[in-house]
Image 1 (cartoon, one colour):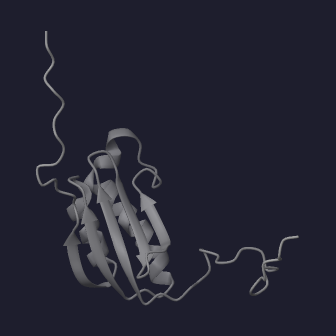
Image 2 (tube, rainbow, N blue to C red):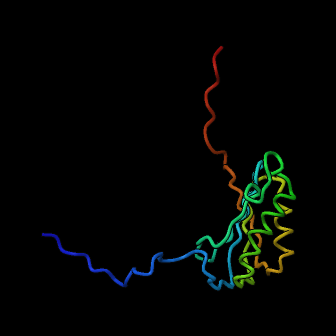
Image 3 (tube, rainbow, N blue to C red):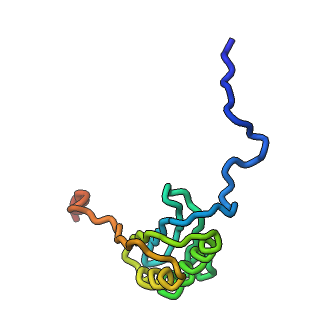
Amino acid sequence: MTKPIPRIGSRKSGRIGSRKTGRRIPKGVIHVQASFNNTIVTVTDVRGRVVSWASAGTCGFKGTRRGTPFAAQTAAGNAIRTVVDQGMQRAEVMIKGPGLGRDAALRAIRRSGILLSFVRDVTPMPHNGCRPPKKRRV
C-alpha cells in the first residue's frame, strides 16, 4: 500500500503559468542570435523565462533573405513590440553570432524606446577548441 502524495494548491484552473498573459515585466533580457542564414530575437524576463520571440523566418522572409540586416531589424521589432505593450522599460542585450543582422537588430532595439542597461557580446569563442580530424590518406 503506497502513501498518497499530498498536493499543494489546486490545479483546477487549466494551465498553470500561461505565457501569453499580460504579466508586467519592467526589466528583461533581449537575446539576439545572428547566424549567416537567420536572425532569432528572444525576449526573456530576468529569470530566463521566454516572454516573446521572433525570427526572420517567422516574419515572412524566405531563403537567403533571412540573413539580411533588414530581416533582422523586422524580427527585432516584432519581438519587442509585444513586450513594450506588457510594460517593459529596461533591458539587457546579449548578442551572439557572426551574422549580418547584429547591428541592424541592435539599431531596432535602440529605436524601440527601451532603455538598455548594457549590451554584451556572448559569441562562443574556442580557446583552441577541439582536436581536428586526422588527415586523409590517399
